[in-house]
Length: 282
Image (cartoon, rainbow, N blue to C red; front, side):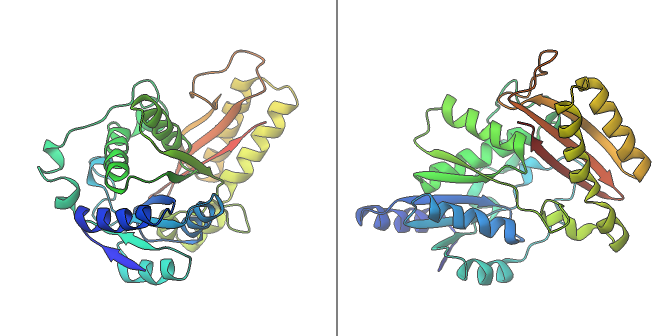
């Protein structure tokens, strides 16, 4: 596996693969990799990629004031070892100057309207502008045939899909199912922030999503299901940012009585850690 640090090296590698007739996949990450990330690499292979590039970049423009940019785990050597054992051909690990030659504050910024002002976007203003900008840069640098994103970050997945379609970028976006621990907790690099007591409590989010799905299937009103779930999480020690059932294609509120094409989404703080999860309700 190669480790590349600049655009010229990445493009030279991709150019060579393309000259050999190979399909290229990109898996964007912020590093500190776990089984969920490796599953994205494996899915890229399963979808026909002859070569897989994993990018590792902790993107400053998607972190807001007071968020964990400075303490976000940077584990390059560990990530290199893990990727080498999971079929990655190249690790692209640029620094900030390589991704933002004029500095993060002077960068061209991409805004995806409608999808980015609700739920995560409402609680993290500007977050999705940073996500869209860095993903567009990575797609332009790697020029992949396909790119793989996890469904755990469901709103991010929709934002990327919308941006790619609207800007007519020649890449296929592949959605990867959420990888979970045995107790249901969605795998995340931020799980390591949890204390042992918090880690034992964290699977309640997934259990709550399952309960929401059952209650909606039983015909309970959407608002009632949302309110009950938020109250249950709060009583268990969480501080919910939102508990919502939305249309899965655009995150708008569903019509009364709608049962198909929905997703339940939760963001909640547990101690100092913010956790997100979701579940398609069909």
